[in-house]
Length: 256
Image 1 (cartoon, one colour):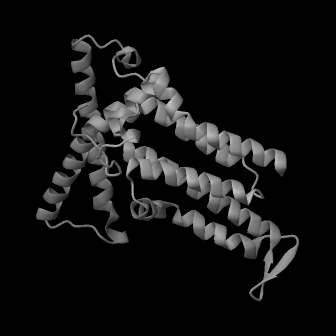
Image 2: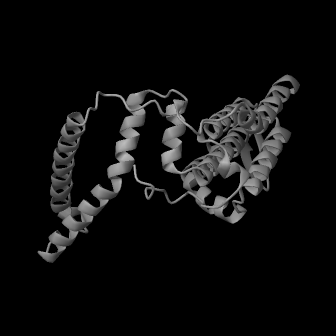
C-alpha cells in the first residue's frame, strides 16, 4: 500500500492521540462503545460522563466540535426514526407540550439518540486520528483473521484504480452521447457497472498471478511482530478512557 492512500476523515496533525499505535485506539474505541451500549437508558448522568470523555479525547486529538458534529450527520436517518418512537410507541402516555407521547417511546428515542451519537463520535475520533493503512495494521496486530485484513488491504490499494477506471468509462460513454440520468435510462448505467465488474475481476486475476510468481503463499507477513507495536506504557495510557467508561457503566448498572 502506498502512503498516498488516505481517507477523507483523517485529520493530519500532531497530537498524543495521533501518535498512539492503532491497535490500542481500536481496542479503546470498542471497549468504550460496549460500555455505552451496556449502560441502562435510565442512567442519564452516565451519558453525560461519556460525552465529557469524548470531548476530552477530541480536545487532546485537536479535533474540533464543528468537524465532529458535521460528520455525525450520517446518523440522521436513525435520528428521524428515534423522533418517531414517542408517537408510535404503546403503553403509558404522558403529556408534553400538549402532545400525548409514549413513555416507552421517549425512553427508546433517548436510548437510540444517546448511544448512537456517542458511538458515531467515538468512531469519527478513531478515523480522524488513524490513517486507513494504520487501521488495517492495527487489526493485523490484534490477530484479526488474515483473510479480512488482506481483502481490506487490496480494496484500499486498488480503490483509486477502480474509481479512475469508472471515471474514464463514464467520459467515454458521455462522449458517445450516452448520459443516463433517468430511470428509463438505467440500462446504459447497468451495462457500465457490469463492464467495470469484469475489468476489476480480470485485473484481480492478473494481480493474483503476479503475486504467486513472487512467492505469495496465501498469507501476508506477520506485521504485528514488526517495529512500532504498542508498548505496555502505551496500552496503559490508552486504557484510561475505556476503563473510565467501563467504571461508569458498572456504576450505572448497580445504581439503576
